[in-house]
Length: 243
Ligand code: BTN
Image 1 (cartoon, rainbow, N blue to C red):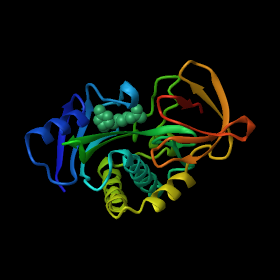
Image 2: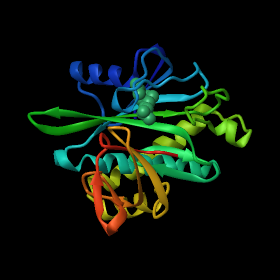
Image 3: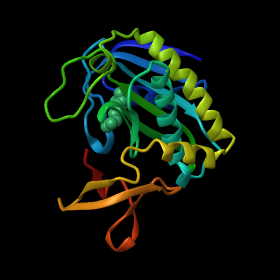
Image 4: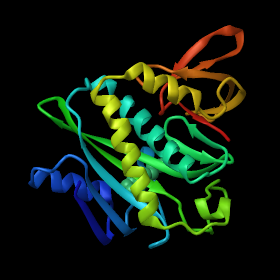
């Protein structure tokens, strides 16, 4: 496993993609940065993180066994790996908020941005970008963000957290290569935030929707039981689960 440590970079995901375009990367090449000047979040958002206090890194994972419509298994495996690594550090009340935010006590402590590397219309690798709030204690109001330190009062060693995370990522990426999809889906669904509880969602047009999360489809869509006992599948662009 090769780890590239950088002081500052625009985005570790962008850096790793550019590197993969110019050289043949070893499986599990990791780029970690003390600070990102243009950290990317999901759906075109930005990811900000105080320099040196948190973990912002990307993993180059070779994956050639998945069809393009099976990409969500990478999200499931990554979320589960992080969930388990954080369980090791006894972070309380962990949950996975669909599609792949990690929460503790209903606050976001980790975000994941997965980008696929496609060659000749086939996925050859994934760039798994992970941002974990570790020792930062101040967050912008309204973000509902927190960190390991803010929640536990403990200052964490970044290398130690990174070590647990990469171990778990290796373990869970084996489930992808073994195509143990049922196992991944069952464990992922069992840890979903607000599963089977009445929840509020915001639709693209701003309307609010009430329903019960039932699980996810193979394509990663969220299955929600709506009024009239109808189960509808929504994708990430269609709805946002409110806290
Ligand atoms: C989100 O929740 O919106 C996803 C955030 C992902 C942030 C990480 S930090 C390391 C990697 N590099 C990036 O530019 N983004 C991801």
